Image 1 (tube, rainbow, N blue to C red):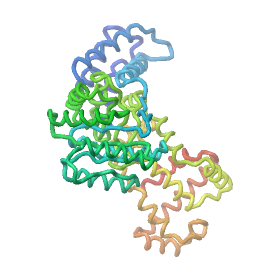
Image 2 (cartoon, one colour; image 1 turned 30 degrees about the vertical axis):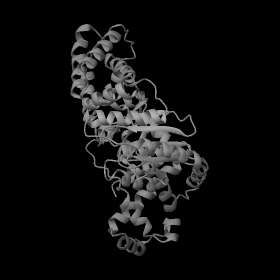
Image 3 (cartoon, rainbow, N blue to C red; image 1 turned 180 degrees about the vertical axis):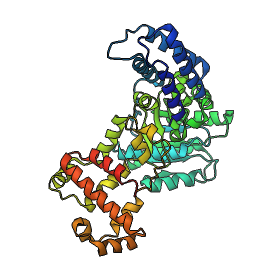
Image 4 (tube, helix red, strand yellow; image 1 turned 135 degrees about the vertical axis):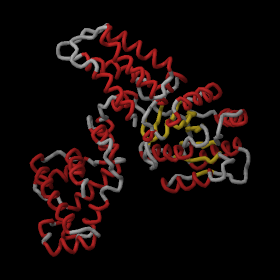
Length: 444
């Protein structure tokens, strides 16, 4: 995400390299490039102008320490201003109420229904909630069916009255149903339109008035750039929503909506959609997003994802096996499964500082490890437990069984042996070692 913006910021900071101090003269060209980068990212001209003026004011008022170069100081100032522009602090979704009611609004095609499923999955798996999805889009033929398909994937129920043409009544009945059945969060997926119209606004306003939800979230397609910001403003003027959800952020290389929507509607971005899968949703952290825009990676998010998947007790058992050089292919498969649950592999690697740019033109498919898994699954339980017995005839059989060739099998086993030795020498790296291991094995 934000690749073009990141590149342009990097070029802007290079102008100051080699300078001994920041002056109004040598900062002018850098700020011109920063403003141009923001405009190219589809940021509103007034916001881009105000942003660069604030950066200039802070930069000229700073003394450059001997240990810090002017370009490094400029990166720090721009980082702080980007963070402030996007909201400074992350804002949690309000789950007070029994049940807590969350109303989802937005234009057709923005990803409302998919986000509703993602949010239900997030609240169930990460917050321990018992959510109920409500189908209030009575106009789009496939909307109810889509919500049902999503609900089956995450094992969350859907309340729908397919014969009813009254979304207000459906929503009220759903809340009563949730109270009777013990669901503590109600997520109401509403109808969208291709454009803002009075009928749409009247309907969503009536639903909000009837339900008095704890949260009204406006879902917007981040790839529509400044149009997304304008649409958000029109909705907020009518609905006064509590937060914004930016979908399809993984496909947006410009970033104008993410950078400016907060300052226009004065409402926080609460969630971002970063992929097609139902776990591809992130809480929005302004500072971490600024890190990624400026090519600093996002180690905190990477560690949090790892902590969600790596069990402390299991990690200690694994550490003991590594220390005794007993790490085997069963352990490897288990660790591989945990890493795959953390999300898109390329996205994970991009969270490591400096890796985002290095991997930009590298195609890392989510199925990149299928060949490895095929080889390991073609081994017998004994072979997986004791890799040392993998002689020539066994390797030939494994190659045939996995649809690979003997060279691929040999390469995997050699890399496994090499990595096992490294892990033993580092003894205790756990997930960090496994990330290195994944990178090592990607070529198979």
